[in-house]
Image (cartoon, rainbow, N blue to C red; front, top):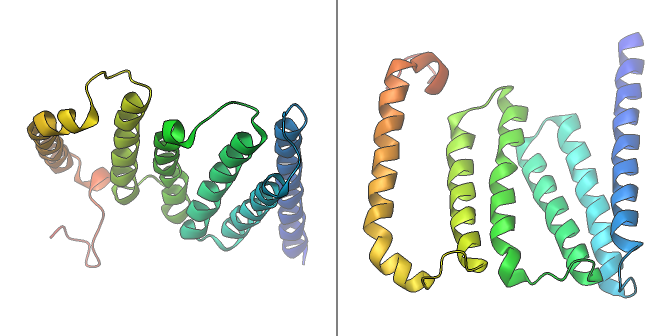
Length: 191
């Protein structure tokens, strides 16, 4: 009986914590904003609260897919709210690589929720998304002056070589550290 009361108490505290964070984020975005009227402002605030509800639910039932969807929905709604309220003058064509990076970053807590440790099944796609998002961000902000088409045309062999070197290094590293890198199969052997 005491355990059920403790679980309810901690779940209640988690819910109140999410509520406080969402209300605080809403005020931080809308109070200094230049444009706080309109349907889109209200829509994205409601979307932020919906995303917080999905994150809360994912933590209660321990579903990593829901956590991934909730975290990305929350990040998207916050970025969209900032764009709609014109708090920071952002254009989507400049910030979409940041959204890609955030999709990679949110894979880490999802993998941890599911397995209680970091696993390569989540780390490799996360690293790829973060790497690609960073490369696209460099092009979006014109840090790399070469047009993207020309870069891909001339540099795709280097990308292929880099991917091959990474996979070879990963294989060699995993051979030395089997228990920490390669996931176990059903029968406990590596196939």
